View 1 (cartoon, rainbow, N blue to C red):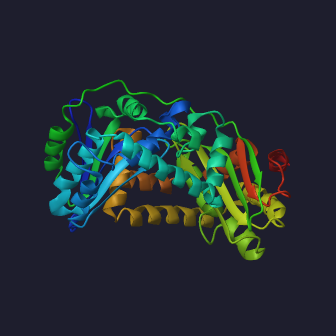
View 2 (cartoon, one colour):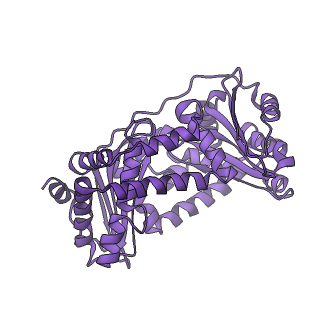
View 3 (cartoon, one colour):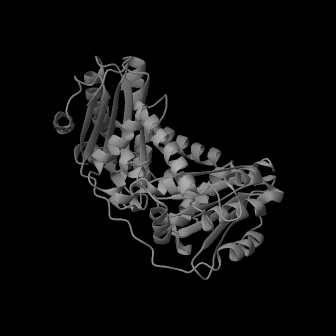
Length: 420
């Protein structure tokens, strides 16, 4: 499998990876703008724009967009995150050209019909309402807001209902003008693909775009804080976050190994101590996520109101213990889990495409997969313990609680327990 990267004269980037033996391909365009690139009055517009892409172009209706892909057995979709918006399709080998043509059409020729805007506004408001009714979804939005208060990176991706209700055609076009320049677009494809053919088609579809200065998102500052919403639910939901490295930080992989060993599987410390030995919850896990300039190690658990106090204290205690006596065997197991998860996932052309786009976004190139594996393998037990010590003792923290959480300790009390 060979990765090839080409940049057009206007800055538009094309990255592909042929996967021999496959008869299908994944192809998409990643826009290096998401929720954190919105001004406060634009909050939710990147996600709104993603929805509107499928509502019709100058040459295709919404139905024709869907039919063009589904008539050949493929599928098309999109998503919005805090740093990117992605539009992608999965098709057979002979339909790659069609897939790219449809994606280019929805990106470059959207109609933004006011009637369709109003219809899709209703859909998004329903999506916001559904998220608000899903405790183990909405709690992560509250956690993000507590970690980065008053910042674009801390706001919900879906946006607030009031703002979403007021977006107009002009608002959508403004965001496109500000963030959809050719040097902010990455075309990625993997599977049964021909790099030269995709580059030639991309030149026809995107080569006439004029380069423009890219808008830069404000730097993130993890300040921390607490969000507590008491409600009569069956479960008490706890989400706890600590500032961690961004994905360009040398300690990023130590953070990943630490969170995997702490709460990344059934053999992890949190799962074994809090669920298996004490039966205090059904779900508990830890994970580390990252952005270009910051990151979060997050612990989530769902438990009863009667158990929330003990579970929270035990979580802090397990973090402290992990910093003191994390074993070589645990670190080796976590590294193996990470490598297996990465390699197994990359057997899918969709996952390959996602990785290609992400690597180009982060590094401007695609590092060899062996380099990533080497970085994981190079993490030592000492690295993990040192990271864990810094995390539990010094890192700013954020806490979100939802449900029957009256008995849950406050963040200040947890801070005292961290350093005790």
